[in-house]
Image 1 (cartoon, rainbow, N blue to C red):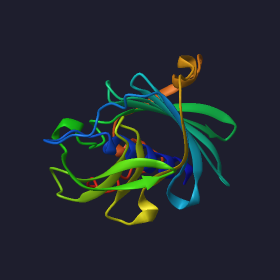
Image 2: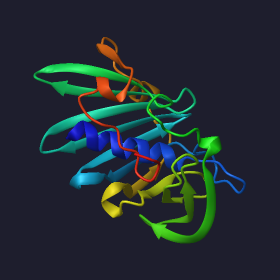
Image 3: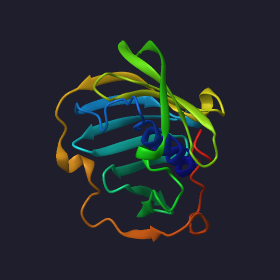
Image 4: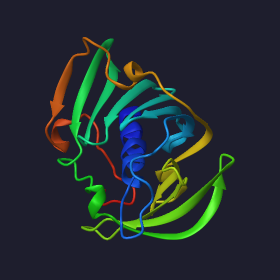
Length: 198
């Protein structure tokens, strides 16, 4: 459950960093650290700098951490299973996450989230046609991201602090054993993409 939920929040976060004819900034222009809520009542922390992000999530089932390389469209989800630490290498292209340059987006309003001004963008999966919404700051930080499944399908930042992050915190720890997740069938969980066809 925790891996599925973290995957949903992570993919939703990635999907909101989109480009279209009128585009929000991409990737985020400011390094930041944020506290956020995720699906299924989970909470966590997002750290970002120079195209790399780390998402730490916690739930009654235990912790999980995802390391995201935006330019490479790769993620490693670090899990603790039966007392063992394992990293799952996820190719976002293989898992059906649309290329951000192909996602149609339209600015439809503005709002304040976590004390920050942000523009509301409506986006649409070019393959399935399913919509989603995101509220993104002028410097490209996604503060809220939701699919058409409703508020429970997305993420929302509750506290934000801009500032440099430690680069070593944004990459998997040395010695982490990893295995390639070559398809949805090989994973012990699904990777739903709220508002983007999953």
